Amino acid sequence: MTLDELRENIDRIDNTLLKLYNDRMEYVHQVGELKNNTGAPIYRPEREQAILTRLKNQNDGKLTDSAIDALFLEMFAVSRNLELPERIAYLGPEASFTHQAAESKFGAMSAYLPIGTIKGVFREVSRGTAKFGVVPIENSSNGIVSETINCLNDYDLKIIAEVFVNIHHTLATTCEDIKEIKRIYSKDIAFGQCQNFLQDFGLDEIEQIPVESTAKAAKLAMKDKESAAICADVAAKMYNLPILFENIEDYANNKTRFFIVSNFENLPSDSDKTSILVRLPNTPGSLVDFLNDFEKSKINLTKIKSHIVGGVSIFFIEFNGHQDDEAVRKIIAKHESGIKILGSYVKESDDI
Ligand code: PRE
Image (cartoon, rainbow, N blue to C red; front, side, top):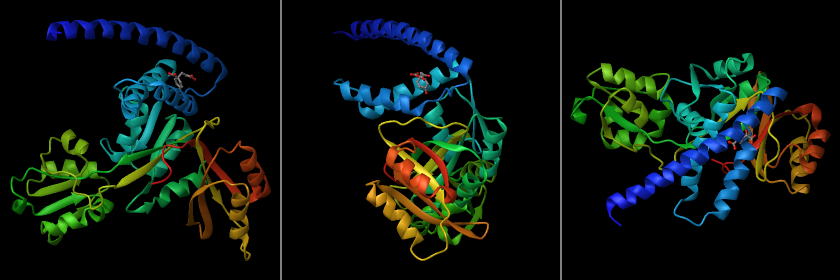
């Protein structure tokens, strides 16, 4: 076929796709009306997961699984906006890694609200200024984010989804030669994640200025002509800051896991994870007894971290399964007084 003939075919298919999208949106609109009449949650991650699994299982064309994710997740985000536009608060500023995490779930069309602190994100979702909050929970190089655990303990919000983002840093600067760089701006943990690069290029000797976010670092480096920023490529692009080096992180597998919190609970899907906070009696064997209950019920524990809140030691525990599963319900009932269920949600990945 000639290029013109190929394009004619593409145009014909796009016309059909547009019609089909609109037909789909008619039904989505009606779902929205049903939900809005009953106050039921618009976002149903377990339903989206079921659709994606079904489509991937029957797919025998050129689309990869991640291409199906990319196309349909954006469409779900458009559907949700049609049913009821809902605002998403995230740990800002704009172009932060949390912003990237938020956009990967809620798409390009949602209304976003950058908030300066994790606590602020929880506060705005609790107040109803935003329906969803997106916060980091753990990074593969730096471990758990304590402030998020504290907020999960203090606020009455539920984890309704997890998102993993590959964290890649760039060195961005207006300097044409690395030798002209006199100062580097970044977030403290980003400096820590790029130690090898900084040493290899002799940049560990120059002044490192920690700021609240890598996005802010990019903004500052754009104004300060003798400086550079360690930041995400999206942040560098947002502030028109030229990128000198890409992927400068020490570990290629540098990932951050984020939680999406809201004020409702998910129904079970075919693959869930549950997060809880546990306060156990200060007696010999109490932790072993608790963990044994999971072993006896063949529930796979995926994480256990101890954490201090207000001088009291608690455990942040995660396992495969949903809080409504029979076996999980029994364990929770047995230890009810010491457990706070943080949420059951579709498992995106085993762990960080
Ligand atoms: C739909 C949209 C949003 C939900 O998160 C799940 C699915 C969809 O587009 O398929 C429809 C819908 O609202 C629903 O099935 O509950």
